[in-house]
Length: 107
Image 1 (cartoon, rainbow, N blue to C red):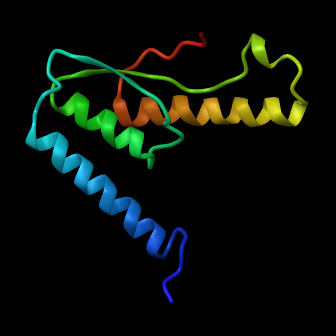
Image 2 (image 1 turned 90 degrees about the vertical axis):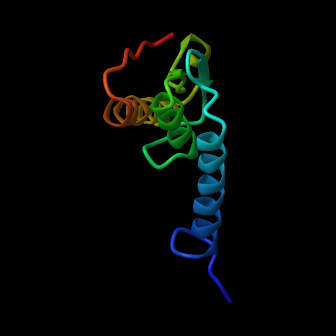
């Protein structure tokens, strides 16, 4: 029975979906001179990161959002705040490494 998880069927399905989506993006080169909001980038392996790279490759612009600690998170535990801060640091690093020169702001 195939495994679901990083080395099993789940990864192959994810890669397959990513391949189909990127094929669709390549086929309809419709992103030049447009700006897109990209959410869901957790790290450089995220599907959202692949989409952002493809949009940029085709001449579009992207605005990427990541979740960090904000004024709305005042009542969170220290552990939850640390998790959000690490998540935001990983997001910033991935955007910088994968998408190049970018402005990252806490808003």
